[in-house]
Every structure is written in C-alpha cells, then in structure tokens.
Length: 396
Image (cartoon, rainbow, N blue to C red; front, side, top):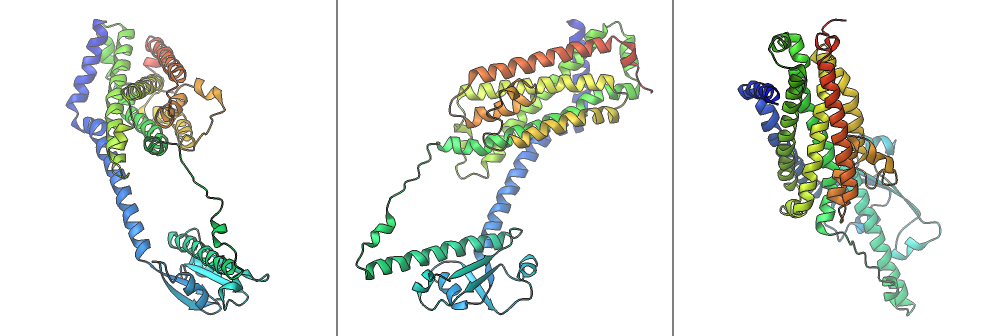
C-alpha cells in the first residue's frame, strides 16, 4: 500500500506542476458549461426578439383575406400579390416567408364554409421566420372561422356557447421540478460522459502510453517498487482526477443550465439530499470505470495516438447512447440496458433527475455492475503491467 501511495503522490506532483493540465481539468469545464448555456440563452433571446420585430413577406392571390387574418394580431406582414414563377424556390431563397393561395373567392366570412373553398399554405421549415408566420397564420384563420361560426349560430338563434363545449382542461401532473428535469436529465448524462472521456484521454494516456513514448516508464520500473503497485498507483491517480473533474463538471453544469431557465433556483431545488447523493455515486462509478478503461487501453497501446484510436469506438458508442437518452422513455422497455457497464450510468442518471420516485434497485444494479467492471479492468491492468509484452510494447 505504501508503494501505491508513493506512485500516486508522484503522479499528483507531476500534474500539480503542470498549470495547463490543471486548467484543462478543472478550469475548462466551469468556463465551458457556463459559457455554453449563457451563449445559448442570449442567442435564444436575440432570435425571439428578432422574430417578434420581423416584417414578414407573404405572397398571396387574396391580399384582403390575408390582411384580415392578421388584422388584430401583433404580427407585422407585407403582402405581395402576383404570380411567382416558383413558389418553392422563392421560399427557399427567402424572398417570401409564406405563400397563401386561395382556391375560390372570399368576399365574406361565411365564404370560408363553401364546399369548394381551399386554402394552400406554403412554408419552408429551413427558416425560423417561415415556420413562425405559418403557425401564426393557421391560428389566425382558425380564429376567423370560429368567429364566423358564432355569427352563423347566432343568426340561426342557436347558442354560440356550444362551440366552447365540452370544456377541456389540460392538466400536467408533473411538478415544475420534474418538467425542468426532463430537459436537464437528457443533457446532463450526454455532456458529462463527453467531458469524462475527453479529460481522461489527456491525463490517462499521458501517464501510461505517454510514458512509453518518452521512455520514462523504464526509469520508474527500475526502482524497487512492485509493478502491481505502480499499476494501482496510476489507476488511483486517474480515478481521483476523474472524480474531481466530474464533480466540478456537475456543479458547473448546474450553474450554466440555470441561466437559460426562468426559475433559476429550480435547478437546485429539484434535488433532494438523497437524489443528489445517489447522482454523485453514479457519477463516481462512471468516473472510476472510465479511468479503468483508459488505463487498460493506455498500457496496451504503444503511443498516445494509438491509445486514442482504440478508445474512440467506445467513446462514440457511449455518446450514441447519450444522444438516445435525450429522447423521452427511450429503452424503457429494454431491461437489458441496465446491465451494460457505462451505458447503464447514462440512463440511471437520467432517471434520477426525471423520475418522481427513486428506483433504488436500478441505482444499486448500476453501481455494482460499473464498480465490478472497473475492478476487473483494474485487475487486468495490473496483470498487463507485469507482462513484458505490454510494458515494453513500443514497436510493432
């Protein structure tokens, strides 16, 4: 144990002297997450303000009808009447934001109910302005239709209140915390796994494959220290760095994400002490497992470049599951996913944030599987460190 701590201290001294590495590990996540979400928030606000102030260009063959639809709304439009050569190309080129072609003649509101009446609305989903004005126009036409229906019912001496029946009350039973967690739960695992891997690449491969390249590993092996102690010292060092960077990343993510939601405090009140502790344990198990994976790959590889190429497929697959985890209820019916190391942590973290009740069985399974997998990989790393074929594997 003394030798393991000696190797661990040696690695820590090396990293503490390297201010650039320390900044990348602990400074970058804070800056990155806070900057990303603040920029996202500002872009969203700017875009919304721009859409509100935009004067939308609408091509139509019935200017009076389109203008009447927007008459009582805040949206500003500029109608263009004529016959364009190609409506689709004009919308794609953003000459118009919307095209409304009326088949028939609308002189009175009641003409909306004629059998041959047809309104074709053309929009381009590649333009936010086009999507916005298409939605506003559809709502405006429906409002006009309802107004005319009320007039027709009144003229026929029928109760116009029939249009308001049945009264439909839509009630979302999810609390404000759960609604916030639905978004947060998809983003947190995805971004956290990305950062854990990228941070591990630089630190983990440098202390394993990097020492092979620099041939400093030979000097370390010349000391009277058991190779298993050297292996465990490096594993513990990488695990410690991962745990620290993961903790800082979660806190930075919380502060960053809170800047783009209306209720800043809800990001923190959505966690109970129990759920926060379990979330930290899941993150801890992921950090430890990723450290073990990186250590094994780093010992096997001849160089940092080769080690990165070996780790990349695992990284990509995990990111793929992270992206899938952003979708609601994905893989909920697939129980096997809970037994796949690393991947299970992505979905368990999401459940901790999005589910109203904590599933302690799932959390326990995730922790046990990830920690057992990490222990087996750490054991494999010590075996590889005692094998000359891997320790001095610097050439083909």
